[in-house]
Image (cartoon, rainbow, N blue to C red; front, side, top):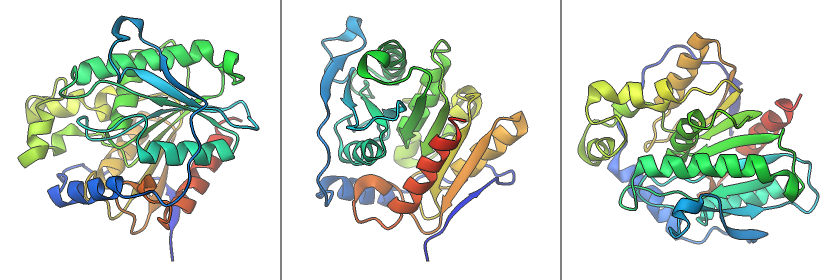
Length: 288
């Protein structure tokens, strides 16, 4: 039986490095058909960052619901800082499910390793946050009901970018199998990746530049993570929850028993319904 448990966690250190096989598994499920029709964006390729407007990644797509509640989600895609886009399958899948619940999605594109670098990407995400804060009303959404959400590496991007956009207020933030402690990227391809991340050239500096230290947001944070995730192991979420508890920051944990990485890569993934139940309940509760 599937389990989605909302709980706090004891102190736990993120030490498990991602497995190469898990990355290949995730890429496979990204490549095959989703298994359901998704909604088309209502607006595409909107420029939020004029100084890099010629770069194809630095833009957003909007998914506006037919019956809006006024709430919206700024959604930052994953892809290990190397691949992915705002138009990728899990983004379209989740945006469709959110639109069905009356919630708008701002799908954010950003530059990555090989196309400007992670630091440039953080600037793109922060610019998108500011743009939506200023433009939500024009699209029928409330500027006071904006939530932040990131997939995997996109969670790291969203939390770090929020630090450089303190003028943007989020009602809550959500991590879908997020990467928080870069010091766990310590061998093979993961070690190479750590060297591409700002301030993380050495294991000693990696944690202090990671979201677990440098990306803590004051708003409530929901951590959704599977116990069988071998790409961003669940001890990443345990460590983040423990750090936030130490700091007295509001945090909830949805632990999905047996779920792996990339929940929204397949429409028939049995862990999607409990994840969505937890997500929608959290977004609703944070509005009060």
